Length: 448
Image 1 (cartoon, rainbow, N blue to C red):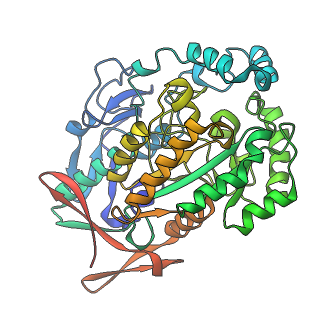
Image 2: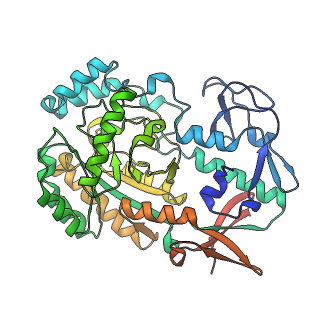
């Protein structure tokens, strides 16, 4: 059985039971699970709304209890998948409908993109992104609907069963409250040549990061750069194929390109991938021979492809672990918003940290060569370093997060008398935690 509560919390399955309360509607639509949680899927006992802006049925109020089973007016696995996999999006939000509205014009845009310069690119991108701040869902600057939905069902389970607390395996190793992942997408020759200086900068704040390298067309790659990145404890991943915006244009072309991407992953000695411009089709990911992907934004208002996975936690797409982008990209911050401060980043960090999530960044070496932008990035590194200890942050490479999350997915809780024991790979780094209710809301505590 697909149990998203067990997947998310790693709690005992017999303590996280739920079922639909009745027959589901034939059509998909929007409804809410309390005011701050938007859902999309089939609905029981009524008709879901066609648009997010319509009046939404409240599924939380329609939930009920049957002994230790939570009865929900929807299919929880379906709704979680619909949000994570962006099935709520309109057809116009699909790949090929990004900065340019047709594949042909998109091809022209990416053909001349290197020669356009940031100023002209910024002009066209701002035109395309007009009205981004009026999009109601996903919610900017961080969308938490998946996390709030699962926490809400857990709340109902605690209330319905009368249990004082529910044991689960904490999200991050050694009891870390949240996780930080720094990544650098290398877009051109100038960015490639700046990688070593960027490693010096990251290392000065004890931050290890991952460099995503474009395999074809954009610039020449050298083994010496790869060796230097790895020797210094950083990471190399594959970044698209040639970054032309056409990776997901059609299924046949994608399959051909995916084979080449897989071969480059072996050549780069990596199992990680990110697509160019954050284009994605998660239902096509089975063509990849990779372990983890980093191409899905939490909320994509400022990306060429709209949507977002609506969670700040890693999740599996088949056998591939998705490490979502949960903060604004440096390019969007500087050149779309015109903001040369870390205020937006600090706001997002605060929200994600309070939900114990993955705080992931994309900072391009190409865009922080300029002194003003680089000083903002230094401010970000200083801020992360300043809260590393006080907020108990785990700063990790994508490959480390992938290993941890996979091991955690195989762990289980075994009851030994009145206590619980964690079993499975990496169990010695795991921490037992408890969810409990305080003032009617779910709170967490780590076991002593």
